[in-house]
Image (cartoon, rainbow, N blue to C red; front, side, top):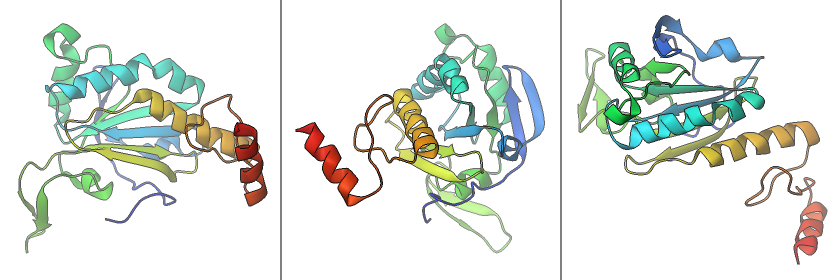
Length: 211
């Protein structure tokens, strides 16, 4: 699949669980267009090991994302009932109780396909049904979507590799700085650092000041 960077985020409607226990029948990312940025991230499965560490970590940073006008949305190929059950279990029980942002149920696996994160070798048969070798679950994909609904950053990790919430926040800061100031962000840039004007002269000046 080609990259989604610079393209409209694929639209969908699906069931989701929000606020820890509320099942939404027709959840869509389009509700945020013109209002909020979105960090939309996929994880492999409910009731696993690395996944709850990520979901709790994003929840712990929820206030920082809210300060930046960012909506957090998670997604896996599990059912909404599975999400709901996992949300009722405490951290000590391996659950994610206390996670309040929406968790989408991609039971058709179409959303994962649209975002290029579905694992396994799969194809459509003559009846339009997905067939596969291997587990058809989502890799650890993350997509930063701007207020126009355009994907500006993406990251996809294999199953064993948990993501950095700090890096997700850094990417939000970089995008918003560029939008507000018009300067581009060099390697390892973080909020408060100097950035670059978009020219060779600007890059040369930045590198000279780093010496």
